[in-house]
Image (cartoon, rainbow over all chains, first blue to last red; front, side, top):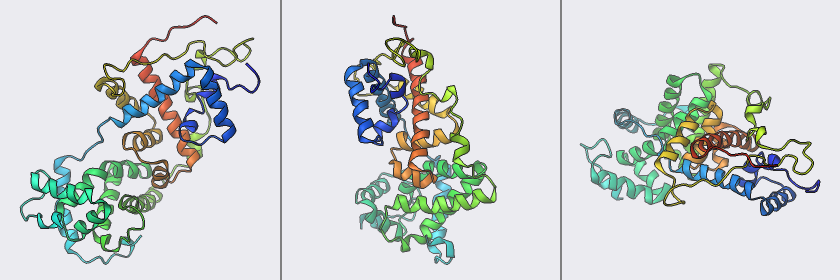
Length: 90
Length: 241
């Protein structure tokens, strides 16, 4: 390896910046050069991608039917009222 | 519009098929149709909005205020402001952005009242060993003649199951558990980003974070979740070095 190389230990700390597109062009290029030569880091980045995919399959939390009912009851009242409150405008 | 026409005096939930359809018609039409339905008092459309956003609203409110009860108050106030202010929504942002701006403003006010606004620097500061993405022992020492800082105990590809593109229920469960166990700020950020699929811009706005701080929190969160999922998938085996 040369002094220019990214160590694996450094790569794992910037993987989020890489995936978010937040690395400067030179760093981005170094990151990809490293990946081209290191199957372990390829596996690592793939694992992070799998975390993201897996998390997106988690069912988002939903409101209980009772709580939803309460809000919907309130909705009827709110909707029939004229908006008068000053901090409702944003 | 269909959502309005199908509004019925007896239906208060989206349980009934027709109401659910009416609501989804309003949604498929995008914000404009949804806003029109809300303006006309369509309860099914409000139910859609609740279903989509309530959990995230609570999560964002909890980021600012002292406890769950205070967060629920902020969310309730926000809903009221959304409904009563819907006539003044100008469509220049998405309704989601508009709603969360109302929420964040209220939560911040409430949070300041409760003296609970924590400077992010206090949470980001002091990167300890546990904040390393990967256990330093997994890498060769910095003085290693040939491979300083390179893997000595590398990760291996995870077998995801019959279809590699689909996470198994078990893996989903592990990820959810890992996320639940994260420190609050990290948990909020990764939940909004990776479960609720918000953009980084949306998260930064709602949580009043800089892009950099948001990324730091997301990075720590994902790294910790990866460690947990790795424990589930494999027992790492050292290689010779």
